[in-house]
Image (tube, rainbow over all chains, first blue to last red; front, side, top):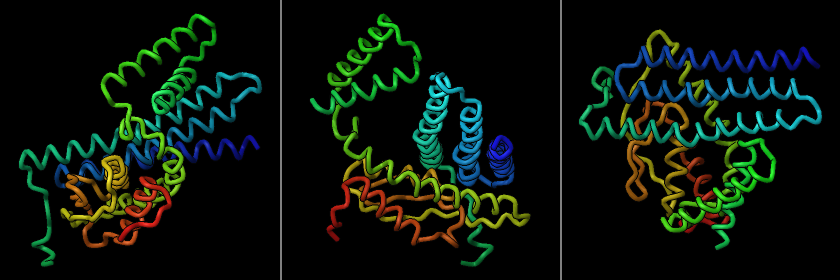
Length: 115
Length: 163
């Protein structure tokens, strides 16, 4: 039981770190603002998501019956993710829109592909 | 009025989970601040369908699991693109049609699009959603249509769509 739980916790944390790392690599590799936003979006949906899931599972594992404090921690972790889900797309949208309004041309490779 | 009470209950529930203190004095402060916030919100005239969307909350929660699945699938796709040595991207701005009639429904759809990596909503005008897509080549129109239908369902329930 304990071992299975530990595997789940570390699996979640590992996946979260993986998506964080890939998102960061993406930010470095992408050619312009708009394409970088796609990579940045990975870090706050799945990256932070799996890290928070790992923390939530850890809280469940450590839970002592009769202590409500573990539940408040759990609820707070869920709330953190809920607020991320509501705020991060708005920030992303605002950045993309500001870029377009400021006249930053989106990078394309249409010409090379001939489509 | 019902909406204001609903807002008060939600706020107080939120206050309770965050505070963790259950003495009469602090509970009183909690109730007091919640009443004050509801009063200010009412004066600002934001206690309406859009500001306190209690009517879609239930349907929104049944939409969430599907959205999370889509976000996961899209994340794996974008991760593959990023880790591909050739970086096979073909970014383009495309226009989607959204069938939502209220601003709330449009916001849900636009944010769902932005949350799934690979597509970002850059502008909304009526039923037209301007999207920056990372890979225009294999944009899955089925998925987008399904997301559109599901968001509209969150907006107005299972009632048949007019068109």
